[in-house]
Image (cartoon, rainbow, N blue to C red; front, side, top):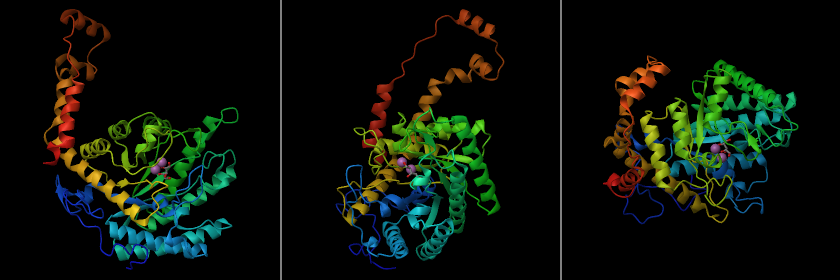
Length: 443
Ligand code: XLS
Ligand code: NI
Ligand code: NI
């Protein structure tokens, strides 16, 4: 493999440990280091996202592209797509990540017709297959971009026009083919335009029925072509739609049970959680406790801005929660940690792409060490056991087994009198967690 696009780095990013001052080295991410029986690489399952890292331009609503990339030099769109992919695999290899993720339109340009688009995609999938073989990098999940083309202005699967729905089906069919061909274990549905901007012209029930049908059709096809992975819905409350149907984890779980859909798990994104007015930990917990936490997009938002800023994750406490919950549920079988993050508009150097990913990987590696230590010391398990102890004993456990009537509960309250008040000890728990975050967990 060549050094064509990132010549400033001729060897993969090394692990040098916490005392290193080398910006192109890992301080915490040591791929083969074992934690709780598995290597860091196996726990974290990092995936670089193609769209932000290689297709991102630094554009924002107030200014066009600000990032010049050497892989965009060719004038022929297919050549540009191949160069971009070569750059991507050079990057994956040098960064040392095991996985990548893409939308159909990230890797291959849309053609003038459905058949032309399919042919473009197929050509680039074959190129990816070759590069995967050469580098050992694997596909985590694939997806279709059902939000950029003008035809999707009123939604894709939830469009009022069945022909638009058919175009969405055409894309998903080929994106599923690509995912299977490249060995992906996940397939994501993020519905940026599956929502509405006003209710005067929107029939929510009709659109929900359409979306459910769409998922059943996709599932049936995936089975047919031998897809062995899982589908994931990625909740987000808004942006670009005013209101998105997959609002948050709880809303999606409700939708799945309303339509009896058992073949979809959730892909939880940090910045979407905060846009919905939740914390990342809340969304992860809701999904995990329902047995449906499949994968994570680990970017973060900016508390001072109200939109999806997709920043690289550098906040340790968020990452510790994520790793704690992932360890609690025994890992991520089909998913992983996809960055879904972009460098800032002002960070236009190619080196910035490495710094961003290195920092994110170190944050999560450190979080894994800390979460493992917190779990081994039994912190949260102990706090929960103490707090809910009553539910394990006679009256509490009988209630849960359905052996107590409302009148019997009243008699119990009369007999026992006023409950003893117990402190929630929030400040104490925060102090203890801080000890782990900043000191104990790392020793
Ligand atoms: C946008 C989403 C998108 C999905 C994939 O906000 O995060 O990037 O992850 O379509
Ligand atoms: Ni995302
Ligand atoms: Ni997002």
